[in-house]
Image 1 (cartoon, rainbow, N blue to C red):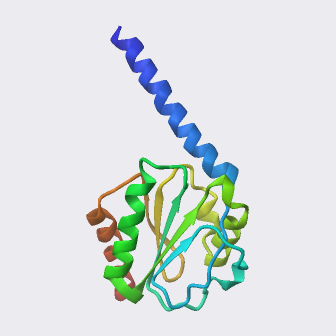
Image 2 (tube, one colour; image 1 turned 120 degrees about the vertical axis):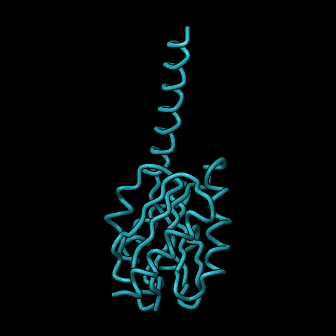
Length: 166
């Protein structure tokens, strides 16, 4: 009996994972906004060209949250944390949210290209995922699923500490 329950649990977990995966792969899209002076950017819907994403912004860490607007259980827990951390950590950290929902269009890929992280973005297989890059776009941390604010902050501070020592 317990084996049957474990099999059902396993199948339900796989179905949830596949549905999140499908949402990411089907959509992979967003429109960027002009964000040069902001430490936090919500890249979701809009019609501005991808070239408006700032490439010259002086930051030591780029934090990218990939989420899906239909992911209510997990993504809605992470998004407010990213906003708080952007406010706390200031100009040294550039926080960007990328909505990978199917309803947003194909501009998420363009946004990832403009940020210089397309190869990492294409490997996203679940949401939410927070990717933390140094100023040279080297992936320092990839945190899948919801984490505590302290976990995200520690990873960002670790990236900033490594940037200082270089």
